[in-house]
Structures are given as C-alpha cells and as structure tokens.
Length: 258
Image (cartoon, rainbow, N blue to C red):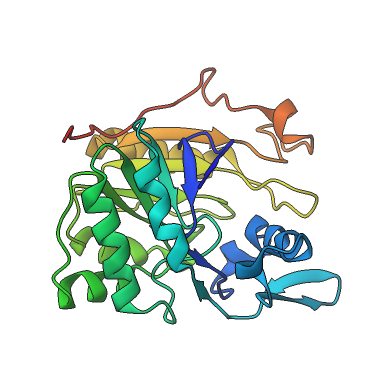
C-alpha cells in the first residue's frame, strides 16, 4: 500500500497487478508505464506485465495475484480511503473469484477503512458478487469508468451491483456521455486526461454530467482539466488546475461509519 497524490483517495492497495487494454479510455493509461518502471526496479509482481508496441508501452493481458499484499491493510490503523488496484482491474477475467473473496475478507476485517474499487468490467463484477454471495460491506464502494458514450451501458451493470456506495469515474473524459441515468449512483468523479498524448476535454461534456448530478443528487467531484484547459489550450496539469464554474468541487458520498 502507498500514499498517493490522487485527489479523491488517501492511499492505494494493489493485491493484483497487470491488465488488458479494453476500451478507448485505456489508451494512455498511466499504470502501463508505471508497471514497466517497477519491473525495471526489480519489483517481482510487475515482471512480464507489459510489452513495447511501436513507441508505446502496453499491457500484455497478464495479471498477477499478490497473496502477500493481503496482509497490508491490517497494519494501517488510521482510517483511510483506499483505492483498490490502481495498477490493475480487480474484475479482470483472469483474477480468480477465490482471490476476490479473499480481498473481501480483508475489507470486512478492516472496517476502519473505506475501500474504493473501480472497474471497466462491471458485468463481471456483478456476476462475481451475485454468484459467490459476497457480503455487502458498508465500507466498500463499487465504481466503474465511463470515458464516453460508447461505454455508457456500464452504468446499468453498476446500478445492479450490491453496494453501499456506487460511483462512476468519468476519467479520462474523452467524449460526450450524453444524458446518463445516475439513479442510485452516489458519486461522480470527472477529469480530463493528462500527459503528453492527452486528448482534449470539452466543458460542455462536463456540464452535461454536472446537470445530471444535480438532478439525481449525486455528489460531484471535479478532479482536473488535465493537459487541456477550459479554453482549449494545452498546458501542464497544474497550470490548468481544478476549477469548474469558478470553484473547486470536492463533494463526497455520504459515508456509513462502522
């Protein structure tokens, strides 16, 4: 587990490493390059996860389950918001349901933390949680990523998932989502893409989501403009900042205290 600069969480925990490129939002995934660096540093669980394609580093479609990492949350006494698998997808098809159940056991036994699980595979998430009768834990938030209208159907699987809190990460937002139904969705994170190959974000795409959040009483968290600002100019992430409609938006869902 590690402290993180991600604005909406306190720490990351990676019991699984490795993934597969699934949709357009994966194209510039920071985790692919990070996995390559960690392998070069000799971190065993990142060995053999990526390959070079042209000038890009991409996932090979290999995942590693890290049994040793299951011990880590028990050592963290101070309550934290923990992003689960920032370097993978817990519901990747090659992550065994048995290992997912082990992760659930850890989360159940550490109720002082709130765990944020984000997946691009909400259909498998739903299948695993229902078929294996995984407990609905008050400290586990389930989310999915939606980068444009082409994958907006993910929200329908998320809505059916048994969870105390459901959330959507609209990041990187690379296209309009349209009028998405946020019924029973408690939290929305919105962010443009960062990095040298970042794709632009348009303010009207953000506004569509903002309006739906207001309508459905969904907490709205604006993470960043990223590399492209509201004036469609390319700058550093820091220079473009986090203000939307003249202010920062750090709304969080209502947390149930154990």
